[in-house]
Image (cartoon, rainbow over all chains, first blue to last red; front, side):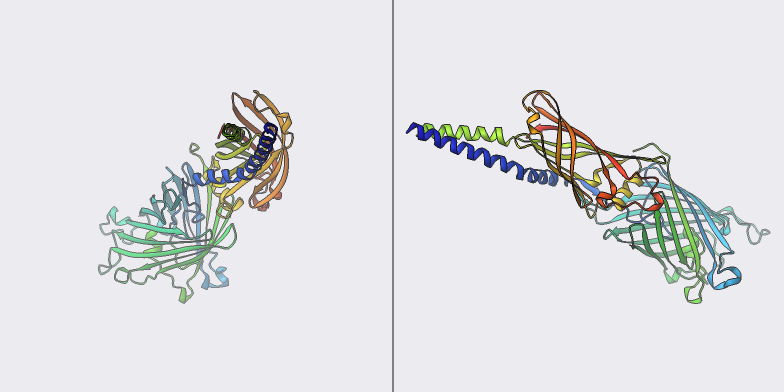
Length: 301
Length: 182
């Protein structure tokens, strides 16, 4: 009897040992899965909603990283409808050079100088909400972008009493956007612009506009972008039209090339939102590009 | 008979400990390096989950791609967006076995050179690999480390011509894990 019991015991034991061993092999991955699930309990912030901090003319909801300097050289050429004599506008160029810098992950500043009306501009972009998933779920990104622009072109009539303040204009912009998928991102940009001086007394100094823009990635490194600013009719300046731009972003390592067609020649908020003279339906289309090159100059992390 | 059952239970539960014991880490470290004349790229992930079972010699790793930290934010963005496509393929992993398990004595302190073979999955591509590793046993804890090279081509990670000279075609990967009994 005792012998049988011992044999039974051994049989059971070896069987158990085998089961347990097999079990661990297959359960190894389930243990991993379980642990990985726990890791999902962190907040993952959405990145690369747009390829760069500008959609086309205006700001995208992207910021540059902390300690990153982004040098932007932008050109808008002449009117394409001028034909072959002007090489479809390429003989005329208006340019802006800009320097943007990331103070923190969520705050960037920038300055620029445009040849158009010899304008200096500066801005701050503050990311208030950042789209994320995981522990903290946030469906949108929201940024606030105040800008200031200073025209330094000579006053039209130097004989009258001109004020320095007449050269200034301001804009306040909210950007709300979302990366809907790996390829598709959209944003809305309500904007308020104030110019200290307008041409006619009947014109409004305050301009309200709402922008809409988006991108659709075509390949990993190329995206198609659209940007449209609708100026509220009561505030629109005489002889101006809404800014519509379409273009492509081409990204190559540290560079982003943006090539586009637009009816705006200006490259700061006041000029392209409030003072767009060109009209698509009349063929006033300008070819332009922005080149962005980033340099990591600040301390890492 | 009662005594026998009792003995059985004790032995059974005991055997589970001996045979079923596995070691776990949730903060293992994987880093990688790309060295070219133009640029050095490196990144580290300190949230590697790994399990090792001494009895069977099974070993498994799993890591979230977006957990790799770079010195430059833009590099990290491109790594996730363009190369690893971490939105589509969030994880990389390895499951395999120690082929020369008999070399290792998990109850005696010491350093053991071993060979591991198994399936490495990166960017949704799985390849069989065999590589040397070191296991160190010290006062009941196990640590494992290895370094090896992977070819980007083997995992269908394409580098555009324009940055070809900035990114090495073979990437050196280092793994360092300190396990605790589970």
